[in-house]
Length: 457
Image (cartoon, rainbow, N blue to C red):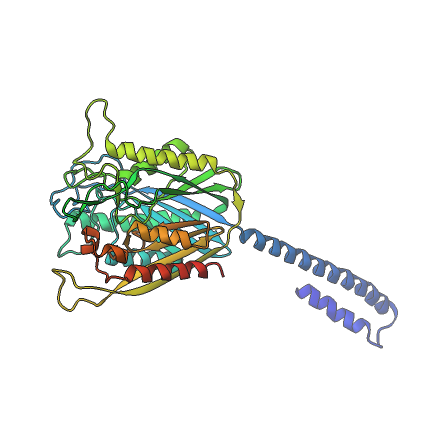
């Protein structure tokens, strides 16, 4: 640049009326040199601008990164999900994992973390969320931190007064692992394409069984509503190599009951590992639990893994059956699409709460519900920190403006069961344990649909 200024200075004085003789000829030569040099600079600038634009176009395409990390407890721990279970775990049947999928387009991110755990309490979720946001400079709306709701996984706690020391240590180590797996996925971002597909599975069944006296008990109601849909997102690198088989299905991971003392991912955890084993080549398969507050596996709350010769343990049977459907959908979904705009939203909806037997005096009259919504191209994801009954998830899917709507529960915290208004007169576990007043679910559905339509703007 300094050379250019010098040439311009010379060019200026070459036009001065005092130039003459040899100096004048020199000025003519210099003038021509400056003109050529200027042309070269301008041309280079145009080329540089074109390269920048092209690079920006490339950067605005969809990129994906995936990672997986083992989160199996190294020490015996207290297990989640059944209050009657007081003792430590006794061994590991199948390892637990956290799987991260990061999608990015034009600077917008969608970070989806599926973990083979039961639930993130508000306290633990907030700490993890804040650590991830601060570490990777993400927006709160860009994070879906979820569990598959396995009832054979460690209780998460950081409370030194009420929590078991082994579980506190496990939770502290888990937080570091979740940050690590998120960072690995972010560091592995590369151009990617996606494809969407759907299948169906009979693994989940409505569990609200009516007894002869008209009461509702936890059991099996094969004629009750159940969302059988299996949604699958295939993610592939631009060279065609497969990266992930993300799937969404509505069932509790409660094929194992309180008598089981082995660590396990149960139905969804076993499904994930089956899919990964079949697809191979470093493909990860994160599961996301759908609206399954009243959906249990067909075989439910069993005392453990039956090792009878020739018998296939029910969690393995059901997990494999679901996994087979995921693989079928994945392999039959061939139309990969490049690009895909990313848009994210998050809102907290304060719903009217109700006082239940045993609740402390002065408890808040409202219950906060966190809703996180995102779109990636033609797909929408909407997550709730709830155990949402299946009718509500089906209603959201039916009215959604997107052809593929992944309804995800146990997402970004935990606020308990929420039931449709018509079930309050029947009662049953999901209703009596709910913190929400009648009519709250319908307000929630309207809000969720409003957010989905906002993603279309």
